[in-house]
Image 1 (cartoon, rainbow, N blue to C red):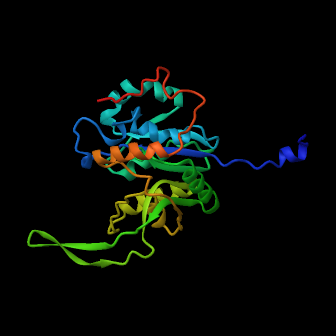
Image 2: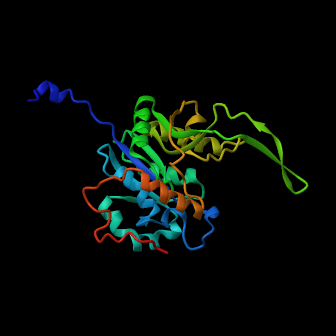
Image 3: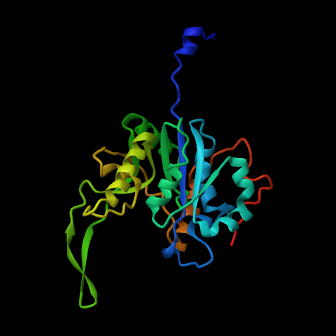
Length: 271
């Protein structure tokens, strides 16, 4: 079937996305003085490589940014320098708080990018279908996050005489556990962060330390769409999670690549 000029010029333009992969956390709960969660070994490669590979072959992802702890920069490039080159990856130093790390990376996003996706480097079990759905929701509403509904019974705890006691049961209706990626229109996210930073410098303003990017956007009145995900999209916080992620990866579809992530296929753990 031939394509005429009218069909060609009316072809919709694909929105462009930048990925910010957050790997600058201190991993205090992981309790390993030699390495942080994104850089531990999971199967045949470091966790962060499992996380970023879900975005590599997407035609709509035009920019890749990894945020790392500046204290690990030299060791990171010693091990993963070839990966950085082959993937066209930009590496940015993180800050003391997560929001500072994301803002540092956000300042490096190209001005022609339409949307920004922020994903935890320690969340390696992302399925392509969930990624498709949250990208589509962001295009439609300008702000979207993956999340799972709370299914367990929630108890509020209170410290009494050195013990934690139940101080009430929390209604779980309409409660969701936020995941990543979280995806936003670039200009919306930049504006929300700039307004947040300005508010924190104002005298008498309540201090807010956001734990995710959606919270920054929510604070300034923009609704964020929830896209139902799966509990398999786990974030690694302990060594037990490595075993669980190993099992999950066995049942998720593996992405295929046009080129290796590393010219020597040497993606082993660095310490």
